[in-house]
Length: 65
Ligand SMILES: [Zn+2]
Image (cartoon, rainbow, N blue to C red; front, side, top):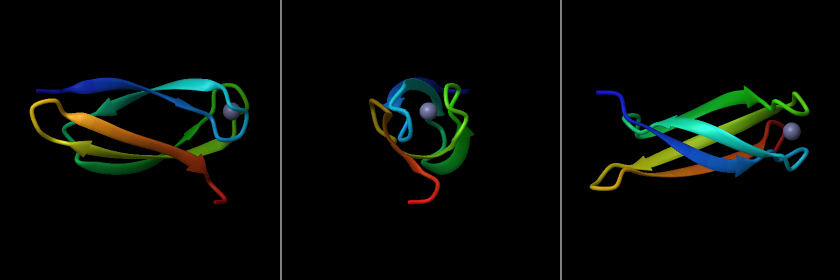
């Protein structure tokens, strides 16, 4: 079963709102995605609290932080 949740965040470079599709079957993940607006690489880190609600904690930071 694939469970995904849509989380909202903001680009750390240009501040544009972005939507991230998170796979909540993975407890911890970190990946790089390019901003659709400014094309700079954002480091997305996501921790999923697997429980009755599968809450995803998403943080987005600049690659050079
Ligand atoms: Zn951007």
